[in-house]
Length: 111
Image 1 (cartoon, one colour):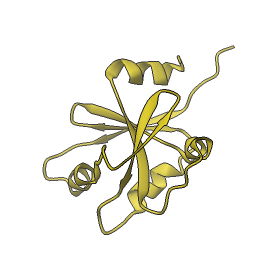
Image 2: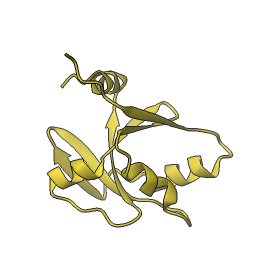
Image 3: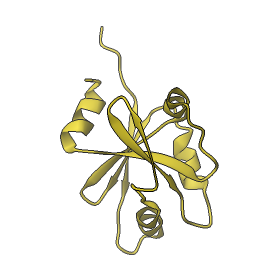
């Protein structure tokens, strides 16, 4: 029997959206990068007055993907960060950029 995978696809969009703006300025794929199972995860800092948005999604029990413009990112969960041997401070998060095919494989549970 195939295991069901729970996931969230969070759409972040809108040129006048503060969330879209904060997410965009928080993206930093060069400062700190960790490789896990052949995938690069960039560790970033949420830039904004409140860290509540990113902290909520980091604690999610489901897999979390962010859809921003034409890009899809996978948010590393606390469990994944533990397996990587990394701890994130409040406001820090780790993203992996995915192709459309990567996203479909992840949702289907195909390695």
